[in-house]
Length: 154
Image (tube, rainbow, N blue to C red; front, side, top):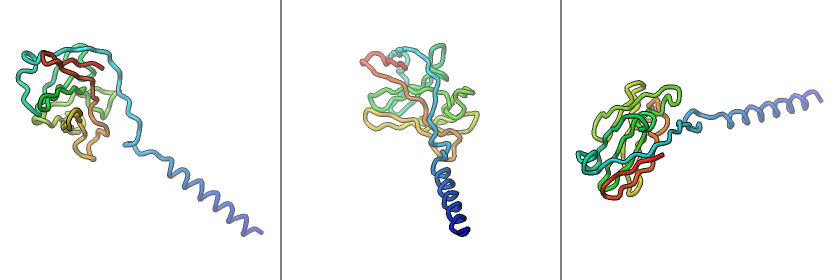
């Protein structure tokens, strides 16, 4: 009788351990929180963005320019907008990424690199390496163009 009772306890204990292991979350699966800031910006294609080539990026900073500034990414005739704040320590610390090359931006605080790419009407600023400190891509904002201006908002 004692042997059967011990097997029962071992079985219950095993089930509890398995349940705990399956419910543990890895950092990369956590829900990402990015502070909300309301803004509406317009950039002149012939003035503010005249020096942007295809597959090129440009940073705009100032009051009401997102959290860390706005990066405009041009891919062929499409314009996309991203926040320049690294996603590693947001919202505790704002560290603005810096341009490393035409489509790679790097965080001077944690060393994470973000690569800009596009596919049709969509663009991404993904973390370059899985070993980077940042687990999430740069925050994407709404952007559209009427051929004269690029409008960006949250």
